[in-house]
Structure formats: C-alpha cells, structure tokens
Length: 174
Image (cartoon, rainbow, N blue to C red; front, side, top):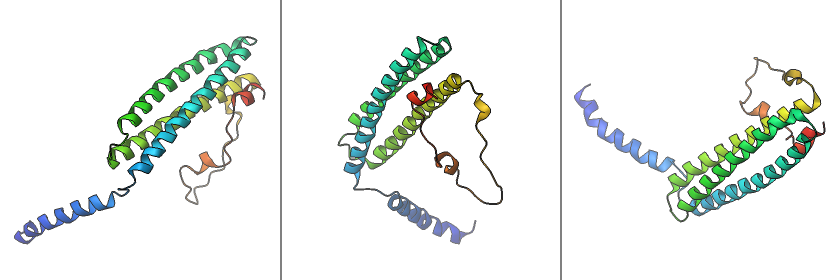
C-alpha cells in the first residue's frame, strides 16, 4: 500500500460506518414491530388450539383404523413442540416489551416468524402423510411441476403457486 491509501483509509472506514448505521432502516417503528410481534404470537396460540382440535379428530379416526395410530403420536409430539415454542415466543415478546431496541425486535421477529413457518410446514407434511395413508395412493403420485431452464423463476414461486392447505378433515375424508 502507498502512503496515500493509508491517509484515505480512516475516511473510508468513517463513511462505511455512517452509511451502515443509516441504511439499517426502520428506526422509530419499534411500537409497530412490538405490535406485530404480539399479533404473530397470538396467531400462533390460535394455531395451537386448531391443532389440538385436529388431534382430537385424528384420535377418533385412529380408533377405527390401526394404520393411523402412529400419526396420533407424531401429531401429539408436534403439539408438544408447538406449546414449547409458544412459551418461548411469549417470553421473548414479554422481554422485548418497551425495550426500544429496534435491532433486537427485528432480529427476534424474523426468528419467530421463521420458526412458526417451519412448524406449520411440519404440520402440513404430517397431514399430507395422513392423507396419503387414508387414500391408499403412493406419496409419489403427485405430478412433477413443469420446469424449464430457459427462464429464471423465483425460488418461492412454485411453493406459493396454487398451494391449497390440506386440513385434517380433508386428509381423513379424501
């Protein structure tokens, strides 16, 4: 390095530090983010109540069909994990109430929504397995999507396109 670049280095670091702070964004919206965190946690609690109702429906169906009994235990395990996650999310939301720390709120909000989405995916996967068992068709019976390598497609597009949520009632009555 030359002497000239050593003189410019502090200025470059200062510019990077200042723009990094300004570009982080969202400052002043802590109250809105806390409200969103509370809403997401309440929605997750509502989902737990629906899942418990689905478990009761599954238990009634399993009393008539022996091949559904393993799914009862699997679904019960999912509900236990759901309860534990809900407790964690509530404690995080309570800890961050009136904290005023945007970065902590934003980071935890992102983590909580990701964990909740992953939990929903696990429920959906289990319900689809139940549907496959009840209907008697193989798991590979669903047609593959048409893919083309001649155009760029967003990663999330196929998952979102015409994806209908399968309920426990749908799975047990195909």
